[in-house]
Amino acid sequence: MKNTLTFRLGLCALVLTPIIIAHDDDPKARNRVAPYPGVGYLRGGRANQPMLQATGPGTAGGGSGTSSMPIVGQGVQLLSWLSLSDLGASSGVLANDCWGYVSPSGREYVALGTEEATIFIEVTDPFAPVIVGEISGPSGVWRDVKIYQEYAYSVCESGCGGVQVIDLSQIDQGNVTLVTTSSDGSTGSSHNVFVNEDSGFLYRIGGGGLGLRFYSLANPANPTFVGQWNDRYVHDAQVVSYTSGPYAGKEIAFCGSGFNSGWVSPGVTIVDVTNKSNPVLLGEIQYPGAVYSHQGWLTEDRQYFLLGDELDEGNLGVPSTTHVIDVSDLSNPSLAGTFTNGLDSVTHNGYVKGDFFYQANYSSGLRIFDISDPVNGTEIAWYDTYPANDDVSYNGMWSVYPFLPSGVIAASDRQNGLFLLWHGDDRLGSTYCAPGALNSSGQPGRMQATGSTSIGLNDVTLSALTLPSNQFGYFITSLDAGLSVNPGGSQGTLCLGGSIGRYNGQVQTSGPSGAFAISINLNQMPVNPVTAALAGDTWRFQAWYRDINPGQTSNFTDAVAITFQ
Image (cartoon, rainbow, N blue to C red; front, side, top):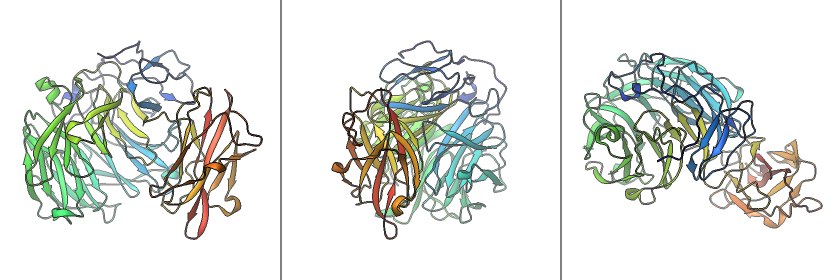
């Protein structure tokens, strides 16, 4: 049972303005809960933001409002939260899907779907996200978005007329624009959309009982319809290109599918979509206890497909369950096992990054599983964005995006909006001077601090990430901010001022991973003279590093400011 405190965020069942749904019997229309009407939470504080109250592992945060938000989680840190009110949504409108984007300059963004629009938010500083713009669309429960190069592709289930093509080339300047709405002449609805970035093809998924519709993105501003596969209804899919093994050169779609809009013979269908004029069914499985095959994702070795069934919890009374499908032989997929955390909540969208599976499970929020042994996934961390309950319902977290280079996790909650989260050691401070200048890796160097703001604990670790490989560098620190562009011929910006100290005795090499880290002693800050950090001090940190870009040069990461206690 969930540990609960007073939760005065207006999360009570209300009768809302009707929203168009895809199916008369769709469960998302039942027990629909109103959105939280207040403001969200920023680390730096804001007027009337709710108090964060720790109910277990986690750190409480300040607030100035009269409402309270329980922190219910373990091993996951809240960086910031934008409510639907913050995002400018109309009264009664809920959120749905989310996806991520990194601009050519290295700045990070989240595309968030709502029942009326696709909203773009800059999250380069995850403690202070900035709303960039939105593209409105027809009203409906579903809106899903994917991104290829400098274009976003947004679809919806009802009345969309096709795929909205959104130009992101000026997003760093605060502009996103609708280019066109592309269709194939059939139904304009899509349940979802997927882009295989390796092949440059977009896949419209579902909608009107259909399967997959294929579009070439040779001109990403104008998707061109090139084929389809409609032997089954497809609810969601992942499409990948194989470069080795028996399927080398093939493009393969892994589909949550079934007949009669997914209600009959639900399962996983594997389709060779290499030849867009002649897709070929390779294999399929109807796993035991299947009710409605929803969404899945491959492990990084492509040996297993981790599938969520959206209706088995409610129809069969089973706990949240992930079905592990062995897809090592694409012609003969088999059920390798299942794993669960024992909660009642409904599994929804899940994604694999390394040895972790990030799953958005509606009323129980984000669940993170260790899948180093994929057949026996073990929950190791979680953050509940919908603390009211863990019931079988379709309120709470819709989706999660764990692929931003910074490691920030974006999560969309139907009632509560956008959450920016962190898995691992507590992330400290606020990022500024971001992003840094691009280095020879094609990315900006990133500064990160983890540990505690407590002077007494003295457990801060500094990390420099996304650096060129096998280059040396070191960290610098100061009590003062600064702004010096290309100092000494460097390609970056020095973001410290005043008396700047160097951790010279701890020169690091970035190695093949393009990263280095040190633990620092807060009692010996290396300025002149050496001093101890004191409670109330705000110290600033940055990393300098060598690069070959194209000749010998140097660069800087962005910077982090930490106020100690």
